[in-house]
Image 1: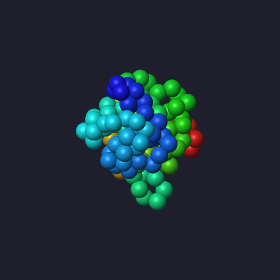
Image 2 (image 1 turned 90 degrees about the vertical axis):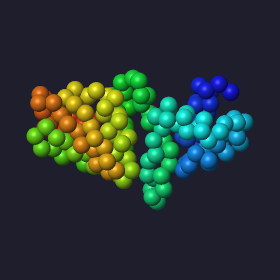
Image 3 (image 1 turned 30 degrees about the horizontal axis):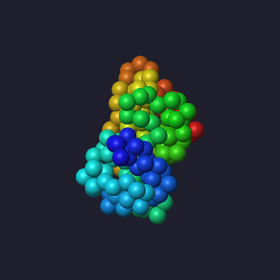
Image 4 (image 1 turned 180 degrees about the horizontal axis):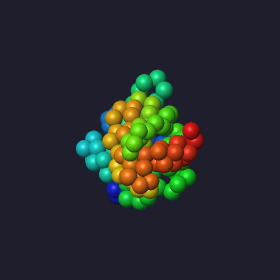
Length: 153
């Protein structure tokens, strides 16, 4: 099986199953007729931008961000992602703090970086907090309001 087909199968398996480790994913692939080594799966996960997110109950599972690495997310996709993961938005001067569930900040930070949202200079993500640095214009307050609106807060 060629890499694009294997990666598509991985994406579907991750959407349908709560996969916690690469060995489990290798087994799921094999059960679906795709033979791949753990090293190959590891490279595929990295190329696909797969991240680990914490689910209710505390376990971490693999998730494929809905937004591709090399394209700007459509606003409705960004709105859905922020609505699902952003719990609170606060700001001071040109700094904005976004609170997320534990283990989810990197998903939000990465989506904002790829979105190239007007006024966002960049992000730094921790476990449950994203620091968003806003440009002087439009400033932190305006960017915070925009992100909060997209998140439905």
